[in-house]
Image (cartoon, rainbow, N blue to C red; front, side, top):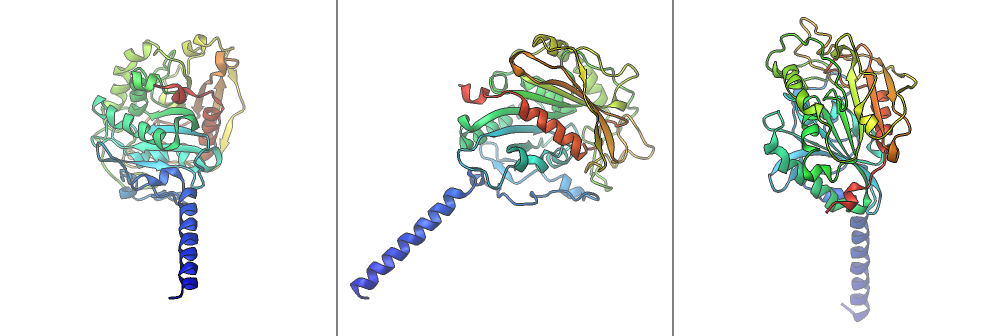
Amino acid sequence: MTVRGAIRQLVFVAAAAGVAASAAAQQPVLSQFTGSTCVRPPTLHCPDKDCIGDRVMNPGQVVEMKSRRTYFLDYPCDLKPDEKVTVVLSLHGAGSWGNWQRHYFPILDYVDRYRLVVATPNSPTRTWSDVDDEYLQNIVTSIVEKIGASNVKAFWLVGHSQGGLTSNRIIRTDFFRNRVDGWLSLSGGRLGGNPGRANFGAIGAPAPGGGRGGAAPAAGGRGAAAGLTAAAAALRELPGGDFSFIFETGEREMDEKGLPAASEWASKYACGPRRKSDEIVDTKAGYVYDSTRQNPPNPPWGLLPRPGTAQVYLYPNCTGNRVVADIVRLEKGHTEGLEPNVTEALVKLMVSAPGGKIAQAK
C-alpha cells in the first residue's frame, strides 16, 4: 500500500468512527439500560382489544441491576441528553402485573407528546410491601443518574388501588418525601377525606383469563376492598412534605354519599373552593378490565370496557401553584381501564404542576 493510500484509509476510518460516535451520542441516554430499546409502538403494547394474557402478565425487559428484577421503561425515542422531562413511577394494584398497570393507566401513549419517562415496576408477589422499597428506590436512582437530576422537571408517583396505598406509604419515607413532586392516586385512597366504599361483594382469588384487554384483576382478591378499608387509618393523618395531589376514582366504587366536597389537602395549600370543570367525554374504551369477574357482573368492581364521561373538580389558586384535584369517572368501577381522553387530562394536570425536588435532593 502506498503512503497516500494508507493516509486515505486512515482518514476513512477516522471519519467512520466519527459518524459512529455521533450516532451513539444521538441515542437516548436511557437506551443504555439493559432491555430498554425504544421502539414505536412501545414494546408489548396491547391492541385496542383482545390483549392476550401472557402479554399483560409480562414483567418487563429492563433490568434493575442490584436486585436483577425487571420493569417497563417508556420514554421518547428522540429524547435528547439535556432535555427536561417528567419522571413517573407507576405502581400496579394487588393481584396485578406491571403491563396490566401500563394499560390500565395508559400513560405510555403520551410519553412523546408530554416528554415523560415512565417506569412501571412489577412485584413478584403481585402485592407491594416494604421489601420492595429498595427495588423501587433503585429504579428511580438509576433513571435520575442517566437523565441527570437537573433535567428532571418533576417526579410523580402513580398508583392504582394497593399501588396507591403503597404510594401513600412510601411518600412518608425520607427517600420519596424528599423527591416526589406529585402523587396521582387511581382508586388508591384520597388525602384529606376519603369517600365511602361501595360493596364489592365476594371477590375471589385472582385467576388469569382471556377477554378483551384483560388477564386478571388489577387489585384482585377478597383482600382488595378490605385492604383499602384497613389502610384508611393511615390516610387519616396527612403525610409531611409538599406535593401536588390528584385523586381519580370510578363513581360506582363509592357509596351513595359520593365524593367529599372538601379536602384537607386543599386546605393545607389554602386553595379556593372546589370548582367543577367541563366534563371529559371519551368515545373510545380503555384497554383492559377484569375479565374473570364478569359472570355475574359486579358494577362496583368493574364491567367491560366502554366509552365514558369523567367529571373534573379542581381546587384553584393553591399556594405554590400546587395542583389539587378530584376526577370521577361516571358509571365506572374499580378495574375498567382508563380511556384515552381522561388519561390525557390527568397527564396535563400532572405536567402543569410545579416540580424540581429531584434536583434539590441530597
